[in-house]
Length: 259
Image 1 (cartoon, rainbow, N blue to C red):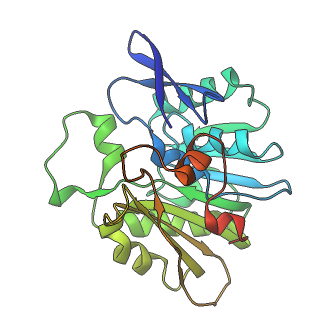
Image 2: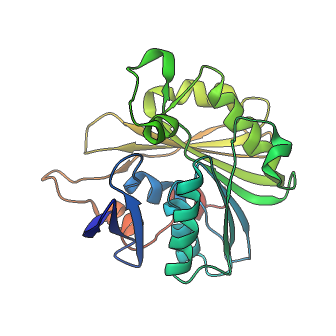
């Protein structure tokens, strides 16, 4: 979970994975929290992995992956050049400069413009904009708008890019709003198989408000709906399962079972 430690000008320094990571984030614009840690927990494995993080922001998802998996290698893609620079600085500050590289690029643009090799990553993780720009109020802050809003074709573009980067039999994991699950599955249909859906609920008995969806290239097995992870217990305290993932770096269910 995110715990703010102190502020410095336009930035705050926030702790993740039980303060294992200290990451600077801008006060204004997009800021990562527990959703980023949940997405990072979709990646697991003892063998060396090449992981690509699309929509990297200040680097929280990717750096949480590197903190959990000591042999993983990371490339993060972020459209905002200032955030890309901040993500690289965060990698260096946390001792991951040798395993992390962040590049500036538009996931929804021509694939060739990213300068990355196709089908070269074992796992691609994606935190796309959650809202369609023509269905929500405009956002004044340009960085926040890019992080949270996309056009009608946006989700398809993010899935297409993730699949182009994924190696044969590689994994792709998305996090999104629960009400967008149908759109996510539609975008993945025909591109990914062996889909697993991990609902995230805020408290016992509440409807899921987020979903993580993981699929595998070249797989054809049916979809699996996993039990929800519940973030708080009946008295509003962090649940044991959420604490294991958010504070102690445990993997989510589909990562523990190999995808």
